Length: 272
Ligand code: MG
Ligand code: MG
Image (tube, rainbow, N blue to C red; front, side):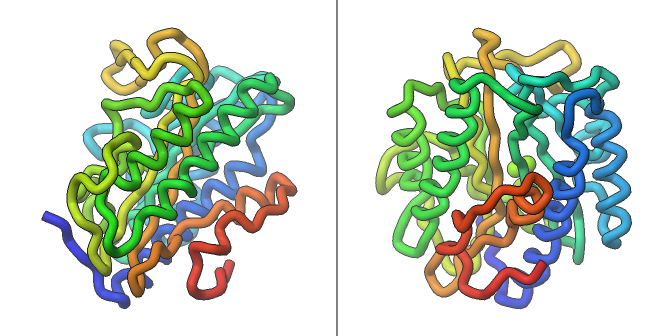
């Protein structure tokens, strides 16, 4: 069952989305060679609590930490550890928080220093595919339209689109209906309606789409051990159009990146 949100609830969800956005911005300041994912996890937990919010992943389905930290060939759900990141690594960082009783859920794949050009390309294309998908999240379209657009964009570059893990409706629960696969057929699946809020989150592999799960019960890696990227935004349908609730602006601020990629998905100016 899709739980639609009122305009007031969407504004409350925007605050939750901004908590995780701001938190990844704080994390971005510290993402450097030598830092460990556990150190980053601590920064994130503090930042979330300082904003009067609650870490959304900690304890959810018994996950042990605040952030899911998935370096290199890890796709998602990696557990923070004390291994320092090194130049050339990438790391997908997924952050959840509860504010106003609503979840924010947000992910970004960071480059540690200089990375291989083909890995850089994977990150670029995966992030592009996120916006290609968001563009289809509008009144009149269906779940399959978003998945189709993401899949087409990524497969055109020869990348593998993970099938087993999907985006999702978002609200008072972390995972609400509908599931939002990153693959699909045009015009298929549930119809989008005003007031829907979803997390759109392409998980894209440089090589095979196939994945494996580690014995820890959490970590998912690519079957061929090639790199994987993950970007995630929270998006509502407002007045028939996609409205971004989360923002990478804090990350870009920390990394000195200039970008207007989010502008077309915002009906009112972003207040940071
Ligand atoms: Mg997430
Ligand atoms: Mg999610």
